[in-house]
Image (spheres, rainbow, N blue to C red):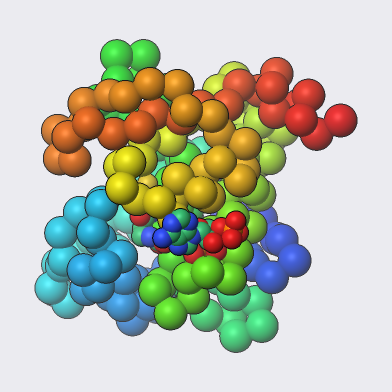
Length: 179
Ligand SMILES: CC(C)(COP(=O)(O)OP(=O)(O)OC[C@H]1O[C@@H](n2cnc3c(N)ncnc32)[C@H](O)[C@@H]1OP(=O)(O)O)[C@@H](O)C(=O)NCCC(=O)NCCS
């Protein structure tokens, strides 16, 4: 993705991360429930540093990297999504990731954002395969991955989370599912 590309869905904009996203990024980075399967709670200062790092890396990492998910009706950053290499897998496939601020869970926003990213990944970036690594107890995320068409393949060892599920979808299977 060009770092300045914006992806629009019915309710969402997926756009580059900005420094004025800090309050919403901190709302997620300080919420243990949001981070239960993916990382550790951050202080306000550490969140500020993380956000600046994401902004600084954005151009160099494109078309990979994280993006902000914005709820159009409120002009509010309600989450993140993006692509990155999956480091702890020998083939280093491209992984899709997503997260939503807790008070917006359960309204289909992660599915809507991930569906748009998947389309972008296959149709625009011509990725041959997209994977996701998800802790088996992260049932919400497993459900999102399944709803967008990713299929369980195997378990892999992730240094921070232990054994996680690896799900995958090839471009061929994606295109067939769209017919
Ligand atoms: C995973 C996450 C992104 C889901 O966001 P969301 O906007 O609530 O997701 P959606 O509303 O699009 O879909 C959630 C699905 O999980 C289902 N779900 C909710 N709680 C569930 C549970 N306890 N068990 C199984 N499914 C559950 C919902 O019913 C929904 O499925 P449905 O549409 O078939 O009813 C959100 O919980 C989150 O940000 N978690 C923290 C970050 C994270 O773990 N990211 C993924 C890393 S792999």
